[in-house]
Image (cartoon, rainbow, N blue to C red; front, side):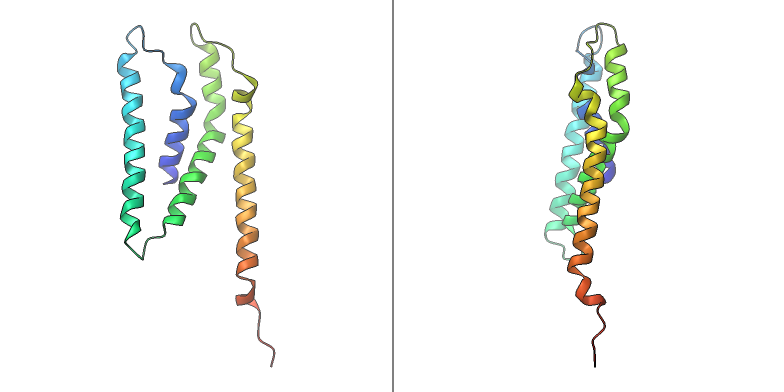
Length: 131
């Protein structure tokens, strides 16, 4: 799910880079097919885990969100550079330039929150009973 999340993030970041003219129609179609396939696999994975008590869908959701945030952090600078350096490309906005830092900060924040929650909820299981 993390890899699918990173793929969705890359598709989001690079969605507007091809405009559909000058022979780019095939690339636009390919990008739309990749988006449909990613969404399809997300639904398949979640639906398979709905009835199976051995599959943790919360872990799948966490992997998807973490993959999206990691993909946004790792690939946002590359998407901004490609956008600015293409022929007829417009300069990136301030938000587009800050997307990578925002995704990285959100990833660190979510991980710290979950780590704190883990130790808060499971603290009683670590306590040794006093006799």
